[in-house]
Amino acid sequence: MPDAPFRTGDHITLQLDSLAVGGEAVGRHEGLAVFAMWGCPGDTAEVEITEVARSFARGVVRSVASPSPDRAQPPCPHFGDCGGCQIQHISYPAQLRHKTAMVRDAIARIGGMPDIEVADAWAMGKEPWFYRNRADYHAALDASGQLILGFARHHSHEIVSLRECNLQHPFSESVRKAVLAHMSRVAQTPAERAGLLGVETLVSFASGKGLVTLICDGRPLFVGSLAEALRADLPDLAGVLAARRRGHAAHRSPAELVWGEYYIAEQLAGQEYRVSADSFFQSNPAQAARMVELVSEWDGVAKTDTILDLYSGVGTFLLPLARAARAAIGVEESAAAIGDAKANARAWRLRNVTHYERRVERFLPRFVERTSPPSPSPSLERGRPGRASSEVPDVVVLDPPRKGCGPIVTALVAKLKPRRIILISCHPATLARDLKSLAEHGYPCRRVQPVDMFPQTWHVEAVAVCEGGRG
Image (cartoon, rainbow, N blue to C red; front, side, top):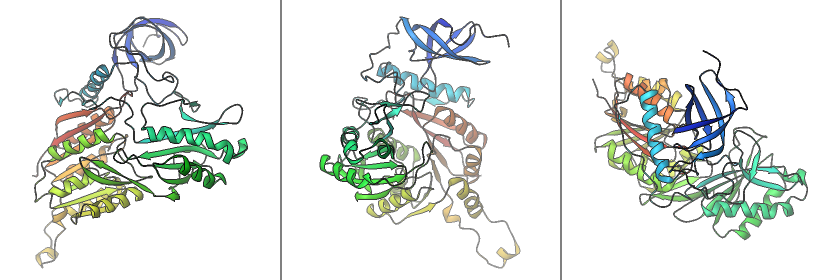
């Protein structure tokens, strides 16, 4: 390939025409794709090049010569600095168009399936702000040794100290401000304050009650005093917990209760779910409720059906489907989520649900073997029972993490020969790869519904239905 027509540090004028995964606008310069952060499709902009690779380049918009009609004024004072949002500068109707296009492009280009029906992304029913039920504030010390709480700067571990965040439920922002107000009193030296690594919140939109988890290096002495101060300041506080983490490690220990409750109660489509501080739950309850209704509609569950829900969490999709089915099986590796799912099943008075606390990748091989039709053998001829065919699923629900299911899981699910597979994905590229794999194993995708779970960010959820048959 010939040398790129520019180098790192160069400034070029670029016509931007689409939005890419990651939130960068894309244009072409002398045949080379350029991804420009803070660009809006339709802009003509001056872009400073920050990275040059063999087949693409990256840059940052430094000025806009001709703005797109879709450009909007970001209301957040931290936009462009904080890494929490990427596309506040794009009008909300345009955000929806571009997210739909992202999903369609991924399925066509990565999945090789351009003819799949992809509907327009569902918008938030109300204003696309203040929708998050969970915040994960990172902690750091400023130059004077005072605590700051915020989110990481783009492509950096440096923390941006927040004045406000308009994506969070107001309870979460009240927690952040209360922690900042009390830390200088309960932890009087910078060394003590450095023991707080982060603050997590989880709030119920149904009740307004919320939990606070203090992420600490060990168990600092200030934890109890801070919990008492938060109780005094926050009337909607349901519980305070503490968890341990080392530095920038990706994982923390399970949360331990300091005061109050370990969980909150949320409602989706009029039904209550218990959700613990350590459990995964959809971050946008309003849109999650619509997804539950969509999955229930697309599943087409009959009273004689068995449901298998992989990555089942607290039972978000599992329990509504179990109510309509003969039997339901949920598989989830998180002990906290399994505990919530069992409690929720009891509260719903469901006695047809079986829960497995396992990694899906470890559970499926044995499950496939156990539910496969038995081969003729002398032992069977003598009347010994075959495998437990009652567990064979008619419908499978897949709601994997961002990395997707992967080819091993999709191949094993296809071996179960369900009537229908519902795939829920939060990343267009892994959605496309998983749909391609399912199609290769006899389960072509029929339709996809993108759902805007994450306004003002590039992220988009999608629900897909795949149909095959038993043969």
